[in-house]
Image (tube, rainbow, N blue to C red):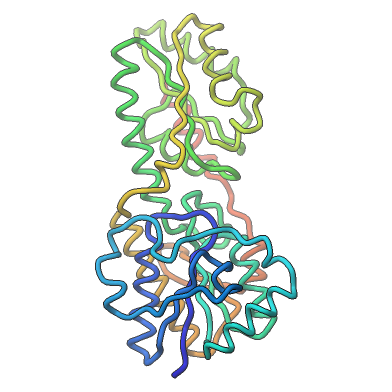
Length: 324
């Protein structure tokens, strides 16, 4: 019997399990067996995999992480290893492979397709930094997790009249920082897409302090923090020195990757997983599944990797203007 393979690659994201479940059950419903490769392309290269039945993916739709585990695989950048991976897939009678991950994972899928194995990419990354799609699996859960953490930090900041500088994930894109910062009413949102000026932030804090406000929230994306010597701690120290307000930095870190996926992530993952299998069943490969205007669609991998996503400067301006 022909088989369909599935793997998760790169950073984990809540909703990956829901996508694995959808791929598995959609493939079985269409008459295929399913093979899940362990730890991304490493499993494909080393023949580490597990057969997936409908029962194997029961009760995982609500779980964070990925039952297939995930990892990055630098060896897969070498063409000889791509060919080896394709041969391993041939030995398993794979009709095609579904790759759940980000841009780097899609480049591996493109190489496999060039080697002769049809592949479909599903965007799974909390950063929402894939240009071809409005939404990536894990993004909503990560934002809600960060928002809940900031709400808790605000309680203690208010109790002590402090300024809390909170670093959220987003190495190459500031989408989490923008939306979380807006949702928690941050005094300032610091992202790579908008110019960072500590004196402007200090000026806003002082002006707002004069109206009676005594505690403040600053949300910073990790991509900006990584470029500043001292990171978020340095920003907090600068605010303390220039305003006299006790300021502390908190790095939320990988807590944003974990937890049960939200309804939106479960729903989108299910739709995208089914769509990916449907494409392979029709003999279509070298595509990335995405979402535009709330509808699931697909793009050529080459085109998808070249697309960029414009930052929502309008929302940034709104958040800035109403942070009084």
